[in-house]
Image (cartoon, rainbow, N blue to C red):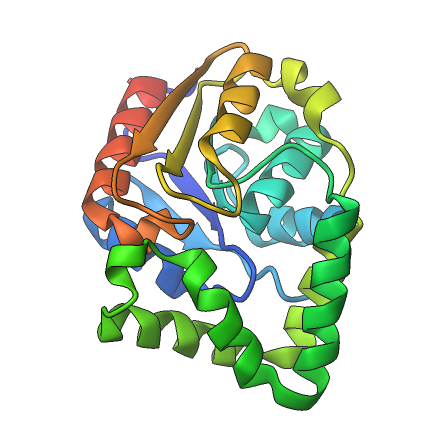
Length: 238
């Protein structure tokens, strides 16, 4: 267990997300952690994205949090460099490989992106936020702005990486650091049951379910997520 007063915290965004996904948490945790956000647009395999993220983090030891695709990368980091990670947080993610149906849907979106990338973003929005927030213009504009910044080419690379990810279920039992597993109650992409599966596989883990919340929990219910992360960091680094 690390005894750093202010641990380094590496944050891993999801598909079509950038640092804005974590902005509330970065601001709120600034007095307790040195936070940085990895660039997950640079490769088209989860293994290469994990290697890239590790190379971006200069501290020898750090806490690690990933949301959705960022969670897939976090699980790969736990295979590549477990000795560097003092605490792990997996948000709105899964240890399972892609299903055949999910892969087919991704391929359709990739095809659509080649001719009309903004329409892909519009199609994804209802899956990313809670139904009660589909009229929250500021939130939808923020998600859209992130996606447009990441861009079509990076989207295609990220989708290839997600489709090709391995089954992480067999390696969950090797994770020995304190682990927070968190999801939105109404996450339709990675539902609560797959998070129970994560907790069932990781020895020192705890589940937090955020109410009235969809897939992008850090934006949907930012304060609840920040509170959970703050408690996780305190428990792991006291």
